[in-house]
Image (spheres, rainbow, N blue to C red):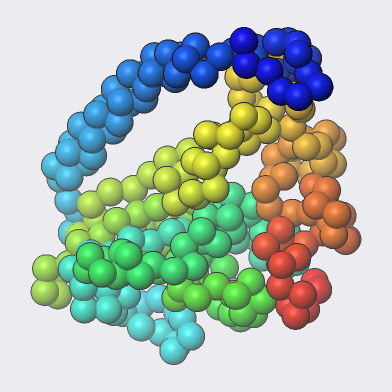
Length: 261
């Protein structure tokens, strides 16, 4: 039996049983069979995704960015492929009042160099007005190009909170794929790493062992009193999830030079 100094018990309240390394290895290998099957199914789905039909649309439609109004096709930056994240927007809201899921996704793609190396450009589109979006982008320290698509029809505008992929063939532009909800999670590497940790994401919907720590709580206008939704986005200086006047986007606590909201 594997033990630790000063703790000879194999039972720790609210935690899995303590076992010998060989027993742990056997359980780990049993789970690995399921993990490999999950990976292979993901590969098969990706193969089907590459075979989806395409929708052609007018790539000359204009969007608004730091250089003013530009045709959508310019977002490819000469590449054949483009991935965009379509960021929701709440008009007139403070910076910490924007969508927690969208802002977290955008933060995780501060550097798209590996996409660029494969001939894929990346941009963020949002339904917000540019005069509100521009200072928000500066405050957050985002490095990827942002564009307002207010008033622009789908597939460039339209529904937000999505990852959307496009293909260019000369001047012709095509919609190839989109996903939303938890389909956006591949961008959020932090979620994948948390899924590997003992306590996981610590969100209310997770299937956890008996006695596992509860999700951090917060009074939320989105999810109601005690909702853990958005714990990964807004907090006070002590890291407590909150939507109050002392809250800030979580990454901003690591940037003391950023002006408070």
